[in-house]
Length: 161
Image (cartoon, rainbow, N blue to C red; front, side, top):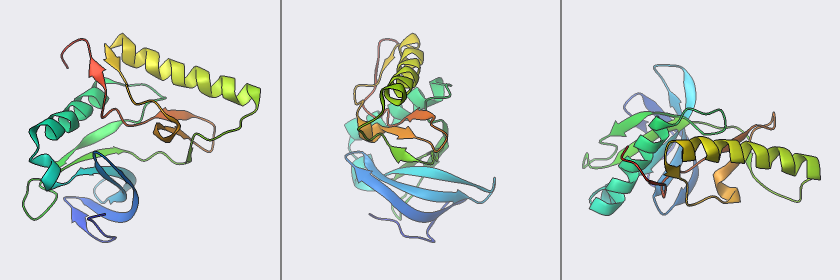
């Protein structure tokens, strides 16, 4: 992972890595202006120079900005110039506490989570957005049992965003 604890991206101070995937790296960070923790999804400069990857990253930002639902992680903004080449980009997203979806689950719990996931997907579908990468790793369960659908990086829409 390219960033370390203490690194700064604009008003965001990196606290710790969360994970990495095909579209970049995700970090826990502190928003020093608003005094809150956030998730920062970084598209490194090498990927930002790939027009297809950059388009997918920007599409994810627009998809998240178009959705406002309690079961979908919210986007707070975009941070540009996240590395020495000023080519990198980052999405600043709601930091969702909890764990990814894991089983086995009691039937009542599974049905509750399924309903929340369906509600999130229905809200996206109402906007013409299809997630296309729904899997346990993209579903967070908060300590209160609230489901949050994450990672709309592969989403497709039937209408322009």
